[in-house]
Image 1 (tube, rainbow, N blue to C red):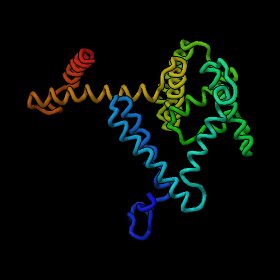
Image 2: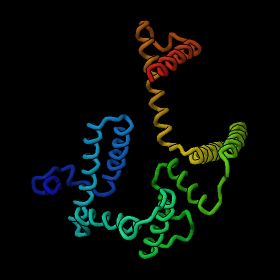
Image 3: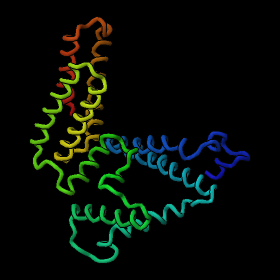
Image 4: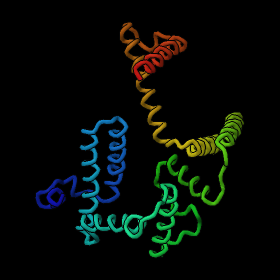
Length: 254
């Protein structure tokens, strides 16, 4: 990376980059790691982890050039953080459960922020805004649940989903675009809450459904190509019949 960033003989593209221009690639590489994991492709996972590591090296190199920190500082910082946030491992041994550790982890994080002068005025203030919206919704809800602001049963959340769907329907009837977006957001937020109560990762669940849709749609494309026809040669009802065949085939192979 030092060679790539060298203005004298390095790569012009790499030399031109800064933190902001590289950030989208960092996010993209993280998602590609997740994709390899979900496909159970360990060879791909090895390669994608390397790509993600390159992003860390890239950012650290730019910081080193600016005299702020370097890669070794990054490694030392995370090592110190892991020791600090696991006192039950590195200081005293106890029988802490994973749930108890999550609570302790958040408490230690709060202490760290306070020591840096980053005292949040509200419980939700330090939940990163840049997270994917659905992931952030779950994190916000988890924080609120810590102080008892939460439904006790998933069935109560399902009832709330029905209520939000009705409000969305009313907004659609009004034709108010801003109200429609607002109510649609409320519906998504409540669905995220249901995922939390069901202990389902909403991002993972939706990625799984996206892949299922792709598989079944590919089945339809292959069926149509096998008939020597085009999509416009079929009615929606006929396409739905093929879709049902795709679902059956998907279950049999799954």
